Length: 119
Image (cartoon, rainbow, N blue to C red; front, side, top):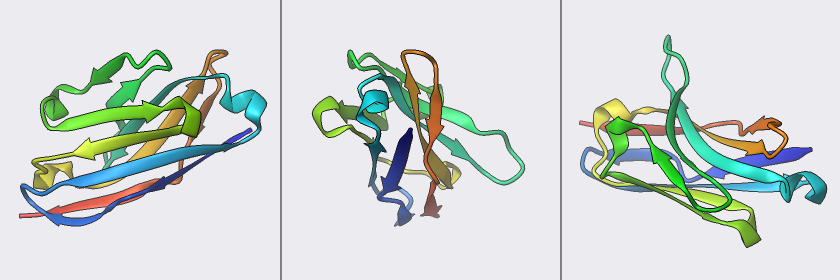
């Protein structure tokens, strides 16, 4: 099994920056099989939405609403993925969840970290 532990959320003013991190731990047999890692976010009453993903080959995918502002990166040796968030807007306020998907399509989620952007 894989556990994902997020950190880095908090309160920031509009225009500011935050960096989220997520580290996978647990069974190495599962961790070594992780293909895609990513970040999703959710606000009350809305569905969870994709923010950004990165594959083990470091191919990235971003939601249109974060392109040019957020950057996802990954260190496979450290089993860690980061989300650098710049030029934050109040509408970026949400709980951000780390996600991982293995090559066999087994999916794991972190517990979520709150990001609040004040205007």
